[in-house]
Length: 353
Image (cartoon, rainbow, N blue to C red; front, side, top):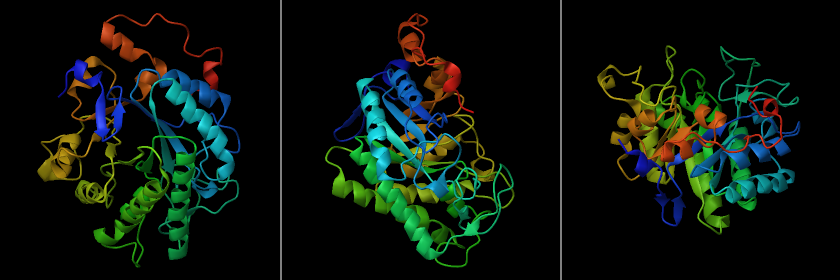
């Protein structure tokens, strides 16, 4: 548990990478980009306003290829033509005083051909998801798996070129990286499916490839984070013990922070009777130790919940979405009395759909 003063003062993630505070604007897909995934004026305005009082702004759900688009209005990191717009976005976040992180995602089976603009929907196995407006996916070949890893690497190169301070691999919320980990969506019989060791190959190969790009191209400190959903509650789904093993391996191969995607920041596990008495963040802390920064999110909307969150970094979504100046209120005890946060842009235009 941290006191508010500690949360609102600077924090060193790694050497030469210091944040103004431990608050993070959680990755939000505000779905306000242009039809082709280009950064829009509403994207710029939103992040200009919402990055001012946090140490780190994680720009949500930038897809690495058209086939990986998760929803209409998402930001694209899928080709070099997007770099100038991404550079504008990184620049405005920096001007607001925050570090800029680009979250990279591939939807896998959690999309459809309308969203992908005709590109095939793909997944580890040809198993259709049981929720969402999704299509029957095509099973990826090993060559196609390699191509997707290359697409993440290329998107990382674009993030570096655009001036971002890091990338976050979206291995949560049932998107492609998690699909490789889950027995529900990965029933392959080759090197990428079956045992936990084989199911972990895709995220491990992916992190190693991304880190190689950073080592080769980054000219300033650049971090690589990884977001995961700790478990799947469906019968036969991904268990927390499997993701604990993945987290240990990710720490060993050198991610810079681990972000836990939670509904409630202190929720208890549902897939392990032996761990029922412990919160998920505490369980992961025991697994990875104190050297790997852990970020938590989920229903953090008060001073009490901030101080009760057992994590190094605290990602806030809804509360900062509505009031990006909330940290000032926390620091002073006085409600924010500044100008309207929309800066003249209709707020309905930047509200998630």
